[in-house]
Structure formats: structure tokens, C-alpha cells
Amino acid sequence: MIIRRHWQPLLAVAVVLLAALVYVGQDRWRHRCGAAAETLDANEVGQVLQPPDAISGADPKLLDALEALPAPFGSLVAGRVFESSMSRPVVGAVDDDTAYLASGGELLDGEYDGQVVLTDVATGAARWGVGVRGYGEGGGPVGDLFLTLGIPEDRAPQLAAYDVASGDRVACTEIGEDTEARFDPPLGSTAVPGGDVVVARAGPEGQNQLAISRLDPRSGEQRWSRVVEHRGPRAVLDDAGPVVVASAFGASDRPWTTAVPSPLVQGLTALDAESGEPAWTWPTAVPDGRSVQVKVVGTDAEAGRVHAMVRTWAGQSASSLRIRVVAIDADGSEAWSRSLPGGHCDAALWGELVVTACGTPALTGLDAATGAPRWTTRRVLAHPHTLDVSGRPAVDLGDGTRLQPAADDLYRIDTTTGRATAVATEAELLTYVAEVEAVGEHLVLSTASGVFVFERED
Image (cartoon, rainbow, N blue to C red; front, side, top):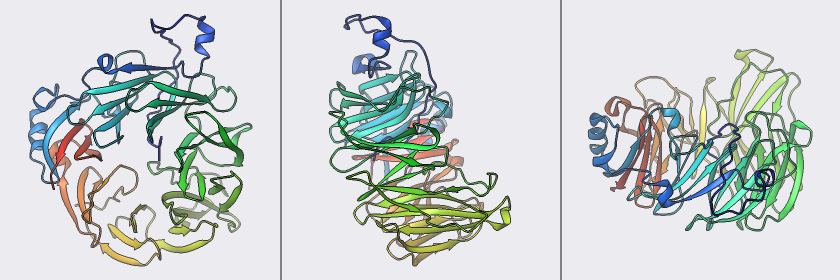
């Protein structure tokens, strides 16, 4: 899965011509596919993450706390402090030795709205980077390519493909017609088997439509294209094996509110992954006067199953709110459904479990195949906040435990019993934990203060 983490920079107008390029006229250059992205080699990017003894601007108490973290965190090998939590990049694994950092600022010098840098995690040295002007929607690896998706000012969305090893741009594909993009336009994508990418963007009539296309990112060939009805602020796609599912909300979104026009149904639309033909919509029926919001919390591509959290209410009445998790099979039929307590819940697919968090109980593990409860954890935090089990990257350690950010802390959770043990807390680090990522034999911990790489210690 790719391009699911958002670094969404705003539009800009500056264009920089590289000395090696032949000047073809400013207007013609601006309208070349990929002209809004500038590829930079390792020397131009410089040292992205610094050795532990050279991390500038770091609070010594923070560094001491990082060095004292228990297993699976071993020695601190690199890191970087950022001026504000808004500048902290999102981090993703490219391969066992390389991570990407994507941000709206502070990674690269220059007038860039968005920036992606591939970095050697053991040394913090840059491999190469891309500076983007315009609106970006993250980035990620697909096979031996690294892809970026964005919208230059008043242009069609562009899918650019780079060679992971060298940073050379392999291809750039314009998707659809040029359009005047509003702030935060609907744009999303997911990788599917075979190396193709499915991209969703605003439909030809704009509001309440999505145009969805399957593309070969290397050749730019369009396999199919389909316009579907869509109600919601975002375009989120999920690979579910036989089908690709479009929805309005992603894992990191917090759209759940009763302050919306009623009735309003923001559900799921599934397209056949091979042909693009409509497969199913869900829900198929909604009682009169009811509003429904559906968020995908995980997919099992092998089984062709989608797990989702559903909120239903009547009018503007918060007291009428009902929440449940459902499992939807490849044909659109409901395999199982389970009601959740309270009005503030989160859910995520953790392997063979659907884990729900509703404050009280803190966590419940449901069998993903049947919906049957396996365990319940009554208390994890010292306060009754709902754990964020879906919105931030976590790590399955492969030994039956999972590193999971929870509120402002990081916990190690036994997925067979639900037992949770604090690994890193805001009180100890003097900064909150944002996410954690595994890159080969290293762990990358992101906090409000910065990004830090550790050797993994089992």
C-alpha cells in the first residue's frame, strides 16, 4: 500500500530550472509532467539524520531518556530534532536499510512545498530526495520504484515514479484533465498486485464524485477508469484483493461527528480490481432519517474481506449514536457485526484480530474471522482516554507483541492476552510519542521533538 500518509503542502508559484536542462521556454517547462518536482542527489540533500553525539538542538534529558529505553530499543544510532511538531516528517520503510521521510518543510533547503528524502537508517545519510512545488499526497515504494502523487497549481494530478536505488525519474503520468484545484482536494491511491496503482481524484462534476483509475506507474498505461458517486471530504482507497474499496475517511482521520446534515450516508464503494466494474456498495439500505459514516479499519486482501467501523444516528441527536464494527466479504455481504459501547471508539485490524478501543474497556480483541471476543483489557492508561489503535503507525514485533502508540505514550501489547506494558511515556521523554516504524533491524521512533533511529534489540 502506498501514498497513504499525508504531507499535503500548499500551492506555490516558483519554478527552478536545473543548469543541465535545455531551456525550452518558461511556460512549456512549467507544463511538463513532473516539472513541479526537483530530484536531488545525496550531496545536494546532505546529512538528514545526525549521529547521537551530534544531534543539534536536542535536550540532553531527552537524549538520556532515549538511550535508556528498554528492549526492543537498543542503541541510538541517529536522529534529528525539529523546531516544531508540525515540521516533523512522517516515516516509512523502503527496504531493510532505507527509510523515507516526507514533510511539508525543514528537510531540504529551497522553496519547496513538500519534500521526500530516502535515508540510510544506520548512518542517517541521504540517498536522494525530491522537492515538490504544489499539493502533495505522500509517497511510497512499489517494487523497485518510489512513487509520489500530487497536483501542481491548476494542473491534473501527476503520478511520478523514481528508481529506488538511484533516484532517477523513470516516468511521470498526468491523470485526467487540468483543473483548478481547491484547498485540500480529494486525492488518494493504493498499490495493487502486479505493481499497478489505483488513483482516486475529483470527478468531472466535482462534488459528490470520484474518478478512479488503475495505472501502470512505469509506462503510464491506464488499465481502466470509472466515475463513482462519493460523499465525503476525502478520497481514500484500500486494496482488498479482488476489489478496490473507495471511502471518505482514512485511518488517521477523525471525521466522526453528528454535526452534519441529516440524512447523510458516507459509505463504501467497491470496484473489481481487474476490470474496474462496480462490485458492490455498502450499506445497501439505511433506515429513513438516519445518517451513516463508515471508515475502513483494515483489509484482508487474501480473503477479500473489509473490516470497517460504522456510526449511525438520527438527526442531530448525539444520544441516538450507535457504533459497531463489521466484516464485509468480497461479494459485499456482511460476514459479522458487533456493537461497541460508548460514543468514542477506535478500531484496527491487527493480523487475525480486530482490536477495538472505547475507553472502557480499554481494548478488546475480536477474532477477525468470526467477530468473537478473544480478550479484554480493562485498563491501560492512567486516564480514561480512548487509545488511538488505528491512526498512527505501529510495529508488529513478530513474537506475539506489538509496539503501539497510545495517547502520548508507547506501549508493548501482548496480542494473545491484551496485556499492555509501557515502553516510553511522555513523562519520561518530556515529549509525546507520535509513531514507531520498523526498518529492517532498526526501529524509528517519532516524537513531537524529532525522529530517532535505534538498533533493534530482542
